[in-house]
Length: 131
Image: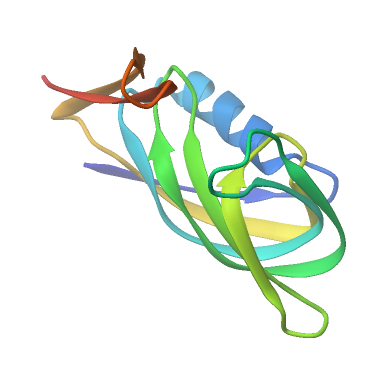
C-alpha cells in the first residue's frame, strides 16, 4: 500500500481534482482515508434522486469517503453549514473548495478497481480485481 497526501486550493472542484490526481499518479485502486476543509458550494445527489442539488454558502467538510479508480471516483460527502446543519450525499461535479481541502489517499497495489454498468442498479458499480 502507498499513501498520498494533497491539498486542494480555493476554487478547485473536489471531484475533478481527484479524477486528475488519480490519472496523474496512475492509481488503479484507491480510497479516501481522511479529508478536512471547507467548501463555498456543494453539489450533492441525494439518495433516490436523479439529479444534483446545489448548496451555496460556507460549509465545513465533516466527512468525505470513497473509492478511486481510472474510471472515476465514487465519493460521498457530509458537510456542515454555518448553523451546524448537516447535509450529505453522492458527490457530483461542483463541490468547490472555499479555503482548503486536505486529503490523505491510500493506493492499493494488490487490487485494480474498475466500474461497470450493473443492470440491477442502473449505475456504474465497482468491480474489484486482484492483481
